[in-house]
Length: 86
Image: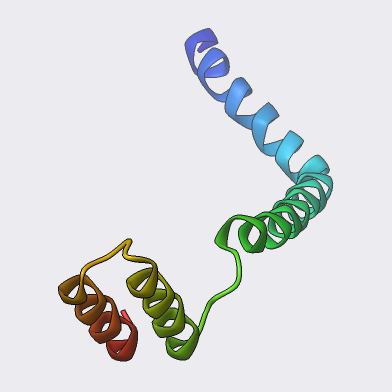
């Protein structure tokens, strides 16, 4: 009989603890989740930078071509990539 008590008492105490403290745990978890989402929302744009449109990308590639930094074949490749949107 003592074995049954040793087996079920820990589960019973955990169940009582979760019932008694569950709301607080859920609130803390929700708060941490909101804080994490806010941090991600601030961090992501800072590392992603601004998205340039196809016109801006082609004009940058044209400037590199004019400066002799890239070849006409590379310019055509950059232009087709910018126009395809990938």
